[in-house]
Length: 134
Image (cartoon, rainbow, N blue to C red; front, side):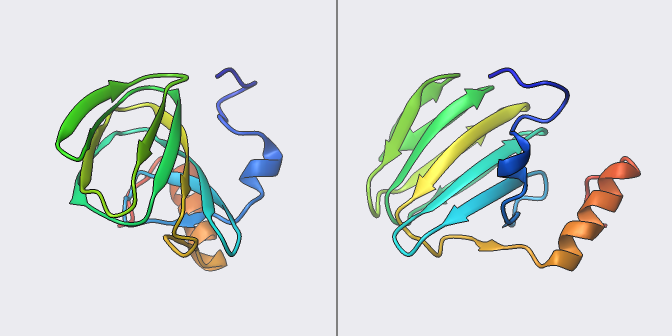
């Protein structure tokens, strides 16, 4: 995916509510309906996600790579490739640095939006070169 400048998503997506995620390096925006949640996100530092399960999930890799283990089977996905996690199936992932993707969750309440004050604090940290919460 190519965009002008350092931003990976256009302004209208970055104007959506930011995702409140337990992953410190995740920067994402969400579009939520009563039926599903779409998340546009980037993980610059990479992360290992432990095995877990939830409702169905579909995703597409825009940049970078992810090693996804779904139901005991591991596969690496790269730009342009999609993956699907069926409802309730155990899965884990190694998300490599520089990852950019879109995920859609059947669980509409899978994530919530960050509080506005938290968004402002995060922007200040980034401006000072500190992406960590502390």
